Length: 436
View 1 (cartoon, rainbow, N blue to C red):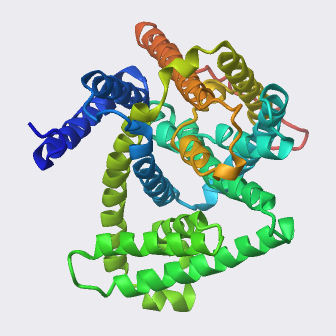
View 2: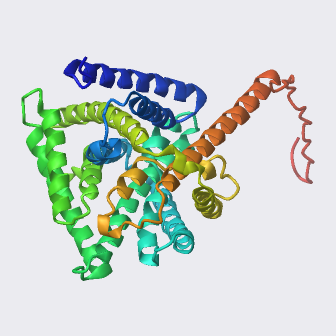
View 3: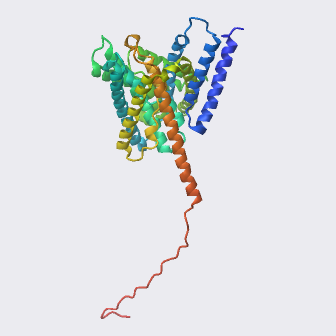
């Protein structure tokens, strides 16, 4: 029987998607991230493939799937950032919340990257400080792919903070990674000044492209225009990447513009906006990005599970380095959140999982910059442990809030009869000469 037939591939892909849906439902009830279940599923598939010897001799499963992993990761990042941008409402009463989340994401990212780089520099053979900064950046980026679906049970303000923070962490982290990568290239010139100039140029192009896309697509009558819109965004992302621009900014800006049309289409620009048609594009795009992100995220983490070497996690050196990085992540996070929020840092301080971006950026490191002494088990260790810590924090928070609710319902506020206070009449004294 042919193993890699069309129908077998359909059966396998369909089964993985169905399982992923059920993993999502389990995650809602247990707060265990579905990502962990998908990685475990990938590990089981890897074990089954090796035991059955389906591939035959001399074929490496990781080499076969690595190009697919990179493609899925890139599309996944675009969909996740677009999905998050569509949720960001730029209203006046939220400006302070957005600014605070941006500041926390930036400070946490830079601090965690520097400390993790120091750890790698002194513990991994052949790791210079420059290379250590590149390796540390993916380990310092929050995973919006894990956080956004996991924080639905939190109170609204905390949920909103985590959506903003994880989204900004993704974008800033990717920008920092490619800036550091470019800084290592021999023909690189300009440094921070050139990076700032390309970022500003990208922002200008992003706004121009966003307005043009909305103006054009609101007049397209075809029912298939939404996937055409996705294709245009992917094309813009890839072209911008070829010119070494911060291409993820294009996706973010487009999502913000279409999600906040009342803010961006004012005055004369408002005349060219067909509100009903533009709202239809927004609603359709919201559904498509949600569904596409689910599919891409599913296959990405399953394939990652298939390609990893679980035995690397059992190394004492890997565990020691990973635990040092994890400890630094939460210490830095606790200090910064305490500065911004005071004592109200639970469970936010423990919601800092690493995931899709971490893996994608690691596989984006050029071959000439790979350090043989760095074990990929560190990635897996950090991803799994930070996800488990988040799970524990969310479960604990739910228990505390459930206990408070039970106490509130079992001990209702006592009532007492209200009695009007008595009023003593004031007798006005009669002055001399006054009549009765």
